[in-house]
Structure formats: C-alpha cells, structure tokens
Image 1 (cartoon, rainbow, N blue to C red):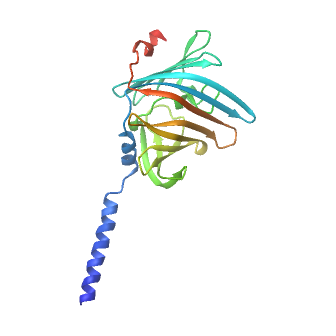
Image 2 (image 1 turned 45 degrees about the vertical axis):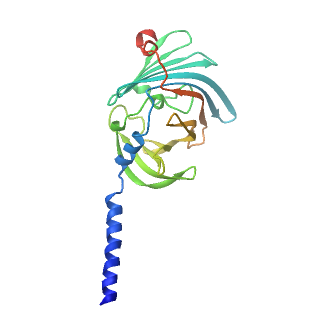
Image 3 (image 1 turned 90 degrees about the vertical axis):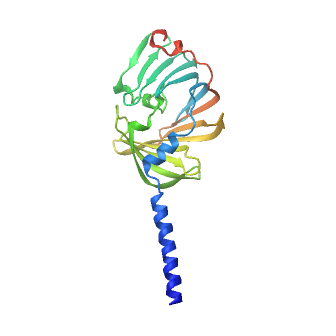
Length: 248
C-alpha cells in the first residue's frame, strides 16, 4: 500500500509539471509580442555600408539614415553618398502599405508604387519592401517548432502578412529563446524559400539590441548583400522638416 501511495504522489507531481509546462507554453503571437516589447528608440541616426555580391562582382555603396517615430507611425530618410547620390523617404503606418519616394541624383522625385515593393532596392538583394518598418499587427503568427541560428536556440515562427501588399507568401522568423531578439528570417515567394536574412554582431546600445551586420542571401546561389552599420545613435534630435514630403 505504501509503494502504491508513493507512486500515486509521484505520478501526480509529474502530471502537474507537464500540465504546468503546457499551460505556460508560449504561442507564436506571444513570442512575437515579447520580441515587440524589447526596447525601441524614438529616433535614430546611422551611417552604413552596403556590399552587394553577385558572382565575382562586388559593389560598395555608402549611405546615412535618420528615423523618427510618431506614435505607431514611423518616418525615415536614407541618403546615399557613394557612388551615386540617391535618397529615399519612407512613411510607415500600421495596416497600410508604406509610402516610399526616391530622389534621383538628377533631383527628380518619384513615388515607388506598391507593385514595385518586390523589386531590388538599389540593385541589392533587399527588396523595396524590406526597407519599410513592420508592425506586429500586420501579420498572423504560428509557432511551428524550434531551430538554431548561428548556433543559438530559437523559436521558429511562421509569419504571414494580413494587411497591405504581400510581397512574401510567408516568412519563418527565428526568435532567440534567451533574449527574444530576431536572429534569422527565411523568406518565401509563391511558396518557395528564396532568401534568408541573418542578424549578426548584435550589440546592446543604450539598452537596445542592435545588429551591426545584416546579411541577405539568395537560396539560388545568385549572391548576397551585406549591410554593415558603421555608426548609430539613438534618441537624438531628428528634424521633422527632413521627414516631410515637401522638403524631400
């Protein structure tokens, strides 16, 4: 009788542990909410280098950027200084396609159409879509398993855009189980895995997790683009005038 009692107690403890684990297991949305809750800047200023690799050909571009949050909306301006002078103005608003304009070296300004969001950004492996901000409520999420990115244990979250133009049919987001930062995203177009971006050399700057190196690589072997963040400052004064359409 005593052994049966002990067995019953142990079985009860095990069931409580299992039920507890299940009760507190996070779903895809909750994991993304933890990522979204990480500290973010209200403004930023940065200088970056973009290296585009296609076969044996390498192309280097240099640019600076400013960003400012207006509630949930974001406005940013990207200014290339080498080898040509191009500028991009991007307005992001949750639930809608980002508004994007390009200023050519001639000074001519044109709006980037939603149908062009899936085209290469400055001849790189990034798309115009990729330079816009993202909002958690523009996507649906599903936890599909676990994996590793740069040998870091991660949750694997399937993400599908539900608001605005859908460039990617879906993406698989790798979120670190340790600190809930994004470590890798696999992009799918028409159901096929076409590109992967990895976030590397992550530093904590002013309490904000910051990748200093981003690598966007095609799965078909047709090259990659590497974005190096040379310098970045957060929560510094950023002029509203520079982010207005009238002054672009």
